[in-house]
Length: 110
Image (cartoon, rainbow, N blue to C red; front, side):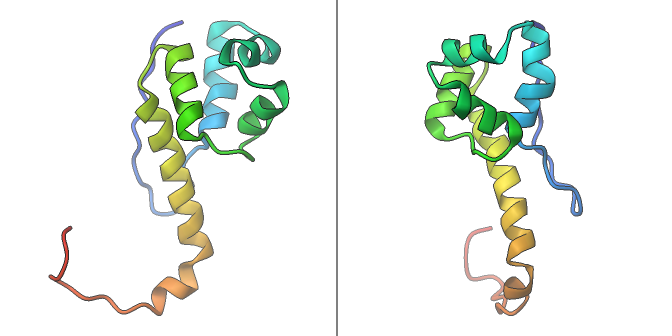
């Protein structure tokens, strides 16, 4: 498998890709293995892996460690991908509430 690097960048209107879709569309085809083989290698159930691949289950810190080991890459990458996805979803869901919160400039760290 060739190593790929995924940068987490923000695009105002686009929802970042869920890390499960990256696993489904890039990692599994590159490895040429089945979902059953991947789940077994990760030490998780096929159902859990299916939920991650569908984007309905998050990549937790523990799962990021498993994926980092399995894919021979940095677990932090998987967490950053999940965090970018979660933050954008929250931003969309809280859009109206966030507009009501006053902004206080120059008080805290940036």
